[in-house]
Length: 586
Image: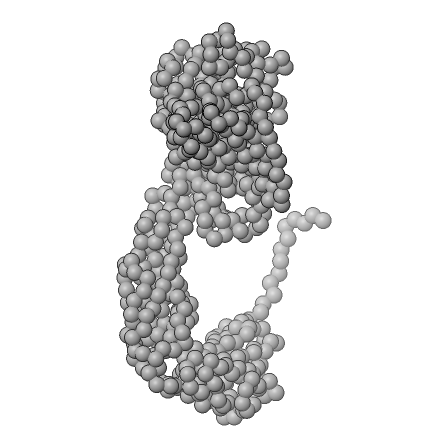
């Protein structure tokens, strides 16, 4: 071809396809035309091919690691630009991929350049209605024409994002073929992005580069913002960075890309059409898709995704509700809430926070409570911490909007205190308090030895039972104090049910007895010990339907005196209803 850094009659460049490493001057450089050394390393992690242009100590050197990892659907490209000399070196470097999405080995009208800047700089163009070389044009729509779509071009155009790369990804996507290529890179290091095509309605003839009629477009990334800019390596300095290149398809379009995933989001027919491409296999339930209204963070969709991998993208659509794409955030997260990819990213996820575990008892009235939180997007700003005095106590604010993660709480002997925390992130999202039975942490103040039975509880299974079913009860007497408890249980049975006395049992101490309408047990519960008292009740002919049946257990022997625990069950009324089938097919 006649293209390159020299005068047109001196240039020659081979359009071989694939990805080329263009250095040390602009256009395609010189190094494409010389032999490169190469080596291969194979391991369980994948295969790495390293190519190197020279070992000379008197000039700029380039080595590129090309890594194909196991279990991932991308190519990892890591250039290393080295200055082995004693002086600073000015240079130009561009990675250039020649691409033709689809199976025809040529480009099509619906190929789109996916760039993120609002303006681009014209590198060169054959179109008289576009700015001259170095001029600015709006992107993607300039003078009413959408230049992101190749079919809207007349003649050739090369362009750079202005002033430099506007995001950490670019790409091309043919919406008719439903496939493309994404390039993900660190825009703070690789600051230049370039697109090039030969035109559409009046293109440069393919005879300039091939003999079979094939065509392509170029997707380029450079160290400096444009080909006119020169990067500098100081003496002995090496510049390295890592990019991810991958094919993406079956998601409709390309709207966002990271090393983890790509999203395609389009509006049409009153709906948002969303495609998710994952560069890794993610089992069902381990990734989630949210759609939020950006202004209010109202959830428009929350989808737990099925199995997804590079060969099996996920597609869906949701009602737009009169909203535009700019009014919604489409966010793809992993199972732990980490951001994988997003279109119009908006932090609508509240942070998580917990009071840290406490010992079962403390010997002093003042003691330290700690808590922690996590926000995967912007970070935690402040915390609210509540406490509850005793099992039946009400949750009460202790600290609000505090940036600290520890404080001293002062209690009273014999009292058990429960704690819970929530957090607010830097975006203003505030989490909710958990409603766990024992809070997130608890402890009892014991200035002298004593038994503590506060965490004792009562269970019944099933809570909704049929007339022919029995109900199994368990009373768990738990001692979290530092002295053995002489515990006594009195559990009053609902009058409408009968005790199956042969089921009376205890894991320690004497067998429970049933007399006078109540089940009784007495015995010793050691510190950090538990005794389970179990029995079964059966419904009778007078057991009512759909009415809560509550029995109350009184447990004596705790530091502050007796406590009660309740459990309710309901007998279901079972009715058989006819089924009407309007049409049946085998």
